[in-house]
Image 1 (cartoon, rainbow, N blue to C red):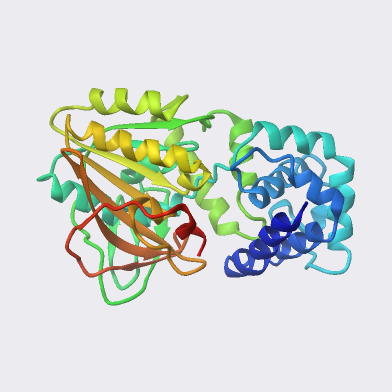
Image 2: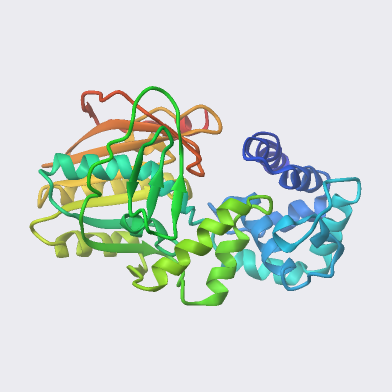
Length: 368
């Protein structure tokens, strides 16, 4: 019954947790694999939601309310100083048993909505290319699955790519450091102007709601202090002027937003790490919808993660592609802008390639 779930947690622990520097989550994955009760608990996760991310975030969220529990000693984010040892798994099992009802409630109610603000450093070159391709028009941004909309505010941040390459607002409290790999340098001219910014989410998070902010923090892995600091800084910036986030069905809301965008703007649809939560039927419907809308006006689509939706083969395990799709009169063309770290820690820009036809790949390609 649990074979597929065991394989998933094994991959998450031995590949993703190792690559992202989380010995704690690696150990918790091993604990889940060895416990029928924990595997059953993970089964409570909503369909299509990443089980490890959601389960561990729920525990992280609740553990903040129980700082005296022994498990908190292993969470750097909560002031813990213990390294992973033989007691880590037992403490995790004990906490999950004690808090099982509260965990199940969170698994039913919450979504994986990690709002990794450093991803803006990987999206910026794509946004600049959209603006250039649209003869300098300002962007009408529409993000699918924006969480709290932090990446919609990319023009309010400062960027440091090393090698003396900086961009954006140097006075911003949000300073995004992103290591450049390879020989290509990002464009460092003026940040593209933004005409409007909207997000569509099943459950938009409000940076003015402390409970939502606590959930955003819980989604960040316990060892990642720098990511938490960036999140806190970005929340402070976005609170001053939050983007408009709409809750509801993307297929109902997207056409309205596209048609309502300013005529003298480039409509740029953004999807970062959300299309993996769509069913194959939903991805096909989204593709058909944007192709149909492109008969009304040109569209640009920026995708980070789940590149198979854009017709591009998956990146090596642990990496992702940033892909730009230009959609005109019912046809799409793609260009890979960069390879990147999922959390935006590094970026490798591609040599500018010719546009290639947007050809859908099979669903199985995403899991090779």
